Structure formats: structure tokens, C-alpha cells
Image (cartoon, rainbow, N blue to C red):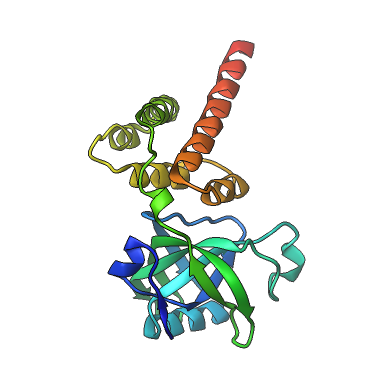
Length: 222
């Protein structure tokens, strides 16, 4: 299967043109982040076994609203997701497994296939250039200040240290915050679907402002 090689991540690790899709109702994977998964359903055990032989890539996708009644079929999913590379697989005695996915690149589904027990899709990778830098220095400064304030209110001191690390690239900072903050799955999907790192950052800033304003109002009522 030919690989698609449109991003720095895919050049370092080729991503197949057709990949298994692992849809979930509450998980959004971002590039440059790591996601632990526990695999227990028979169809997804098969998916992991096949993927380990065919490129080690899995496409994470978010279910659309109303998935509950169709979960064991093929309910609709958002067409934009993130490809992850299986960096570690821990087989368990009863056939289940734990694995770690490393987020590589955004993808868009071009065509879905349902001939296996699990869903597969033909994908194209999103262009990487708009997602390398925020482009405006003051925007990163604003994001860092808001994120630090919010994380301190959660007593997440270790994360505060990471956020203020100037050696961290814009891309890693924005994707890391998009992944770890307590946002809803749909809010995270909204961030993932940004057209550039600058737009993703602006959306993240708006979410943080909204959360901080809400905390201020609540403390005022107290």
C-alpha cells in the first residue's frame, strides 16, 4: 500500500494510504501527543494485530452525535482525525492489550471500507506548513499567560513549568494544551479542525478565557 508523505512526521515514519480507524465517543488525539489505550473488544484486538503488521498506524476518530444506538455497527464519525503510531504494545494474557499511540498528523477521510470486522479508510494527510508556528509572538505570550493562570488554579504546577518552557516549540505547546486541558470532546474536535496553528491557538485562548471568566463569576457569588 503506497504511503502518504505530506508532513515531517510522515517523512520520519511513513503513513499508509489506507489505515484502520478506531472511533471513540470521548477521545481526540492531537499530533505531538501520546495516548494510552486499553484494547479489549475482539474487533479492535484484530485491528491492533493487523496494524502491527501493516504500518503500525491507527487513525483515531470521534463519533458524531447519536452514535450510542449504533455502536456495534458503523455509526457516523468526523472525517477529520489524527493518525497515531503504535509505539508500545503490552499484550495481556486474556487477549486484551495496552498500547501507546504517538500522534503524527491530521488526516481527512476520503473513503471508508467496512469489509473487515473494524472500519478502515483511505486518507489524505493535512498540509503541515500552517501547523509549524503560531506566527505571531504576542499570541503565544497570551496563551502561555492564560494557560499558566488556569493550571495554577488547578494546582497543576508541573504542567505550569512545561507551559513556560521557552524551548518548547509552538506546535508541541499548542497540541499539548489542546490534549491535556479539561475540554469536552467536541471542543477538542473544534481545535483539531483548525486551519492553522494560529487559528488553533486563538480558539484555545478563547476557551481558556471562557473558563477563567466562569471561575471568576463563581468565586464572586461565593
